[in-house]
Image (cartoon, rainbow, N blue to C red; front, side, top):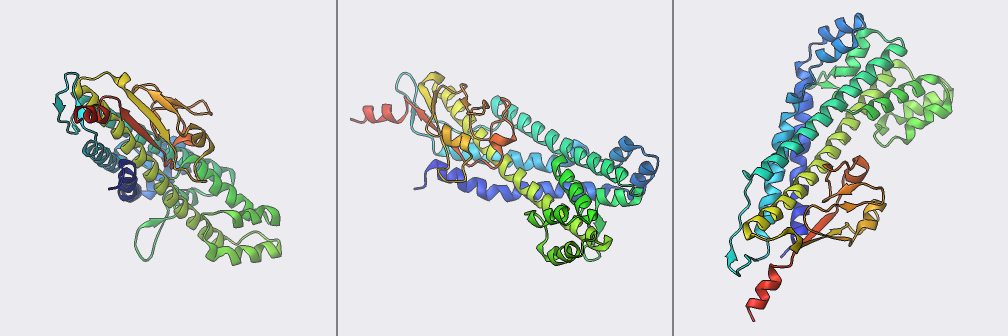
Length: 350
């Protein structure tokens, strides 16, 4: 039978696509509600804040992410409870434990996880829009062009807007604007940087290479295609990253909560629990988590300390201030051991 770690890993793989779809649905909804004329009018007046408001990037638009997160959290807690070792109370009585999503601690966790996720995504989406507007003004672009860069251009095939920055974060928007400047520079060294981008559309490489060979800026029609594809592919990457990271966080948080609930149900002290960090054990593991591997702490509240100084109670934990460098796409696990569970059961069975 697969270990709990293997089952949770499979669960994360299964649920991540649902989180990604929820992110994309939220982005599509925001784009569909934007009235381009309103954005253009505000940009004509150089009313940046007004233009941002006209994009309607409010937290409520990302509610689909909350639902996907709640599902991941509940599924992780349920799976953990089903694999819980046999438990006994201090008097040796058998304890029947079931996962309780309505538990006060579980509900508080879901609220905190959801709030952090939606705040982060919406704020970063606004930052990307601000970056695009500022860059557009500095390059002398017209309001209509800037607006289309923000919301995307309608596809003649699907009718949906493609290639906008809605959903991207600030650094991604900055990368795209820097690519625009490089491809318009006519400087072969700067233009060649585009060919090293992993999220580029390689089908457009030959057109870029021809411009580089001629030492001329990329023509407007091709540049628009290059940037549109770059935005779409970065949006897909962002969706995948958010989905994997937030699903891991939800599942690992619910695993932690399930053991807390089991402790409470067993009327046992948390100091009877030891927790051991387990890395994925391959070359893809970030160095700080390689160092954490096999480190053990006692109790449920004491965090693991990364060599970076970050504190994490479990993989994906950002509640103690751990940043993106410690949690994005993490594949680690924490092993929980009850000193009063299986060992006690074996002693009674002799």
